[in-house]
Amino acid sequence: MKKFCVFGNPIEHSISPKLHNAAFKAFDIEANYTKVLLENGDELKRYISRLKIDGANITVPHKEAAFRACDKVFGIAKKIEAVNTIVQKNGRMFGFNTDALGFFKSLHGFGEIKNALILGAGGTSKAIIFALQERGIDTELLNRSQERLDFFTKRGFNAFCWRDFEPKKYHLIINTTSAGLKDDNLPAPKELLEKIFKNAKFGFDVIYNRKTPFLNLCEENSLTCKDGADMLLYQAVFAFNVFFDNIYDEQKIAEAMRKA
Image (tube, rainbow, N blue to C red; front, side, top):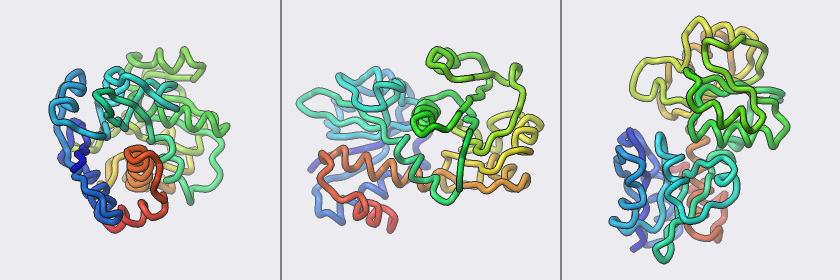
C-alpha cells in the first residue's frame, strides 16, 4: 500500500486526508493519506524517509523548507523557491507547487481583475504573485515587517512593510497569512485594511472552512469574498495527479474530492 501525508504546523484543521482518501477510493487505489505535525521544517526529509512516504503535501509554514529538502524541483516551484507537493522515488525527493493553479481555479466568479494586493510574504504568497504576474495582473505585496521582502523586490515586485505603505486602488486583496486560522487576528491593522478595502472589489483568504476576521471585515466593507476551500480542492486535484504521473482525469478527481 502506498503512503501519503500532509505536513504542517498547525495541521489538525487539515481536510487533505479526506480529499485524497476519497479519490483513492474512487479510483480503487491501494493507498492511505494521513496528516503529520511537523514543528521543524528542517526535519522534513528525515520524516519522509523514516515514514517511507511515497508522496506528501506541505502546508504552512514549511513550503520553503520543502524546497530546500528536495533533490530536484520542477515548474513554478523552482521559480518561487517553495514546494507544496513532494514525490519520493528511489530515495530521491522531487518537488512541485500546485498552489498557483489551485488559486486561479478558485477565482472563478470574481469577474475582471486588473490589479491585486497580497498580504503576507510566505511560500503561498510567492506562488500567487508569480501566477498573477504571468496573467498580466499587476500585483504588490504587504507584509508586517521588512523581513522576507528582499525575495520580491529583487524580482521586480513592489513590496512594502506596514510602516512604509500608502494604500491605493486594488481590485483584489488576498490574505496568505495564518492570521485568523486559530485566533481572531487580522493580517494587518484594522484601520489600514479599511483604507485598502475602501477602493477594492474582491477579498480572498487562503484559509478555508472558517469565517476569518479578514473575511468578516471584507463583507463589512461590501467586498465580494471567498475563502480558500476551492483553492485547497484544486491544488489537491493537481497534487493527486502529480503523485500518479498525471494519468487520471482532473474532473473525476475533483468530483470524488468534492463529495468528501
